Length: 184
Image 1 (cartoon, one colour):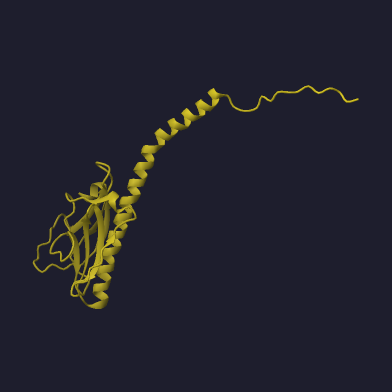
Image 2: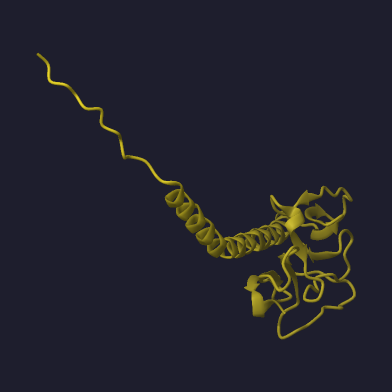
């Protein structure tokens, strides 16, 4: 005959208190990590804006030298969205593109941006002649410690967020980048 089996009750699983402790710990860790993640994302956004601005300036400069015509890299804010354009100054055709994937999260820092001499289009620009040098018919360059002009980006949703800038450093069109304290 078969021996009688006792039914065994399973003690596996979690109690309600154990589950609550795990949920509370996850919440505390999330609260600690969230500000760091937001800071990281804001820094990545302004870095992307700076990279795009520098590429735009370099593109305008290269096209000016290659085509022996004046080209302009322009930047503007349109309804809270930062946009850029690179265009031939003699054609008059301007196509605006969003600066980043999250263009409404970035803004131009008007206090430290001074790349706005003689713009045909946009609020901030750099015009390059056929030699790739910075062009200004009036000679009104905003000199500031060997920096001709710069455009500075910061986040629109955080006060005192990170700043990144694209700098035109010389009349010959030397382009550089800067961050935070170097952008003011």
